[in-house]
Amino acid sequence: IDVDECTMYPQLCRNGICVNTPGSYRCECSAGLTLDSIQNACVDINECNTWQGLCRNGRCVNKQGTFECICNQGYGLTADRMDCEDINECLVDNGRCSEMCNNTLGSYLCDCGAGFALQPDGRTCRDIDECMERPDVCGPGNTCNNIEGGYYCTCGKGYKQSVDSRSCIDVDECQEDPRLCTNGVCRNTPGSFECLCAKGYAIAKGTTACVDVNECQTGQAMCHENARCANLVGSYRCECKPGFIGDGSSCTDVDECTTGIAQCSEQGTCVNTPGSHRCVCHEGYTGDGITCVDINECLADPNLCEHGQCINKAGSFMCDCEIGYLPTPNGKGCQG
Image (tube, rainbow, N blue to C red; front, side, top):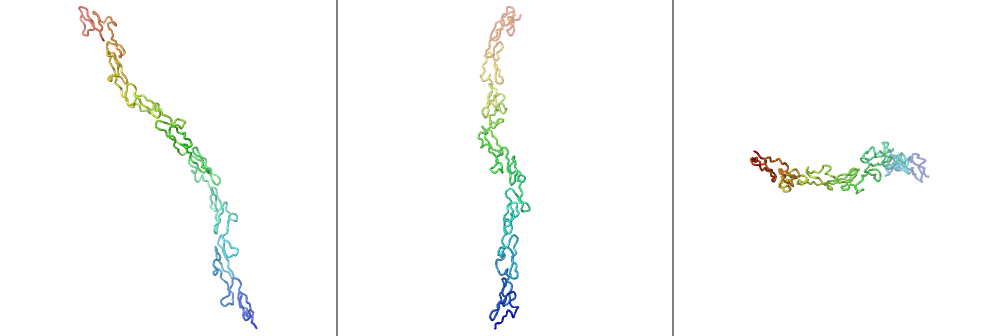
């Protein structure tokens, strides 16, 4: 007759089920348990040590007949409860981010769009006032206007907005209007331009054109005091006045009396003067010096030769005295 060991020995198959068999018995263990070395008791299997790859992104805790995965922060159990997988926090209330939520392994990050800055709480975005942070962002002479999430520039004279309105670009007036700076060279400057006039030219008041400077009127001409200034286009010329010789910046008097230029009468004398000359008739002659005519003193004064007769001669006269009178030493009188 078969002996039922399971009934006879209740202590068999601890933590398991004893099953009688013909002439023997066997122990059956529940999941998570295994037979000990002598096959008469069920002992716990330490899955954490036995199974590789359990509880990734967490830690494995062995329990009687089973195990448990304790997941790291930001991870949750998989459906089979044997692993930990990343939790996408952005799927719930956008991760409590005011703008963009970016999921990361085991965590998440809040981010802000252009023109906004993330606040110390790591969730809230605040508008960046670019105009305060970068006062010169639009350049000198231009105005920065802050708006939600950005800014735009209001450009001053000589500048124009860029395509995105976030900067001011200098206008090259010289390229836009080649007619600027007539008779000169146009040079672009930040926010403006300047005309560079050639020597002898200057900017006309109220215009951008270079016009001829009349050096003779402005006092810029370096002519001698005895020269005349003649204005030329872009320059001037100095010419010595009649009676002077030189290059105009230096003029020397011409002595007409010694050079033969003067045309004085043979009965006259040439007297040089600054820039000219004059002719003076000799004593006894009258005229303008160029033409000199003898003065007939006898006609002019009938009483010249008292006690004698007046006789006119070239440039003078003499007295022919009566008997009993003798001529004076100069011959122009009679004495008794």
